[in-house]
Length: 409
Image (tube, rainbow, N blue to C red; front, side):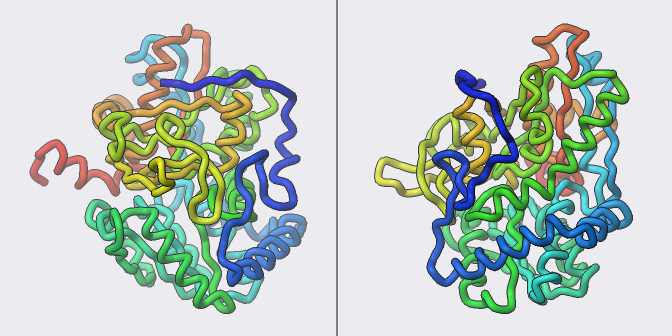
């Protein structure tokens, strides 16, 4: 189910956000006064670092030598044959060290924290991939690491909890509320307020108060930069469509950003449809949400008539969140990025299909994009080209899927 709006004016992707962190009417800074100085310090440090050739060269080095960039753009031949329409390419972020795109941002922010003299790192995590990436970056650079994770997510992502602890991170379970990502972010922010002088918060998605949405987007732009160069080399032209899953939206904006001013490239973000668009049964903000403020940011979110945050659900812990990144909301309003959702049942079927046809086990988050990508491939002619961002691998999800399918390991 896609939502389209008329594209009203030419885009200038580098004009946003403004100095206050606004993407049109979205974004901004909504935090306690205690954190204003820390955010201003972070913004100033990032502004200097992004222009510093030494910082950028060191980041490129670690992305290559430690993370494993560039990642491949892989033609999914059997999946394409199965759909019978457009060519499907997979941008293989799942091949990165720690198993997902999250390492791009974690490495970059860890380097920035070290540059700022911060020796203690905190992070939140849902599916565990950002937590694992942050733990790996902290281990590499000798930084103290504390990761907050909802107790429910810890149960369904126990493998990633152990991986974080193996690399020296302290994983703190959060028992409040739904015991998922929203509550983990709440606890991380409480920690940051208390320890702001010594601690940097490596936020894991393109969300939160300025400068995080901009900064995380910029650290993931490498995805789209590589994909554009690779598809031109493979096909001699740009793709017709780009598709990526959207929780907060970091992998999606990382892929989309380089193509925003290419009017013939259609972009689709795929949210978590859960059990269907019923209150408390999904995490599709554009299908069931409205404008509000949550955890430092104004954007689309799931809330009731009194403004209380609604419960969410998704088979994928990484998409199980009540709000979406402000840049996505801005481009959705302008009709530049379209949004769809995939249900848990569709995701479970596509998870197994991709594994069997391509020998690639995708993360449940990434499988949401595969669901929509297969629908689009079937609807398009064979001379069309689709790129799906395979943002992470599914090793972490195998035990959960086996439990759902009632398969004994």
